[in-house]
Structure formats: C-alpha cells, structure tokens
Length: 117
Image (cartoon, rainbow, N blue to C red):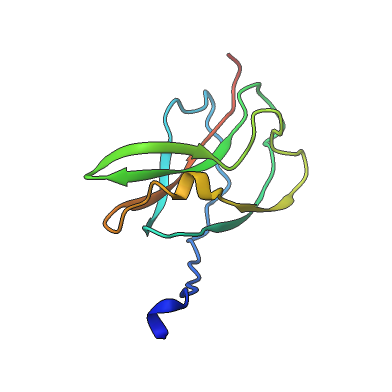
C-alpha cells in the first residue's frame, strides 16, 4: 500500500536577496533545482523595485539530459510584481508537470527586470 499513496516532500529554497540589476538581465537565472515531481505548489513573497519598464518573473524549466524542454512562468505578463510585498501561492498546472519523467530535473528560475527598454 505504501507505494500507492503520494509522498509529500517540502523543499525550502535558500533566501533570494533583493536583487536589482541596472539594465535588467536578458537570461533566466537559475535559483535552485528539484527532482521530477507530479505536483508542485510554490509560495513566494515578491515586489517590484519601483522603477523601469521590464518587470521580473519567476518560473520553472523542466530539464532533460541537461536541456530545457519546457519553460513556464509563475507570474503572468499582465500581473507584474506589486509595489508592496505580496505573498503568492502558485499551483503549477498538471498540463506542465505531465512532461516530467523520472530522471528530469525542475529548475526554478528568476528573471530580473529593471531599467528601461
């Protein structure tokens, strides 16, 4: 019976310092890695730095054989970071996680906004 029930594992990521990049960054920057999972609920606290038009994002990539096969943002383009700290909980859709295979890795990433275009 033990293998029939899902196992709940909680990961706590290291703190991500407040980061401001004068001209933003043009890449997804890796934050931490997780093994392949069938369900993922992410909670985070975030806010905008208050200047610039390129807004930051948080999300995940599924990596297979060291290559990203899927990128998915936890933050929607029409829901930029608020100007005051906000707590969010995001349940990653099964339609994304269905692509995970046992040896895949999930990479949580950040994309720093900042600056002007």
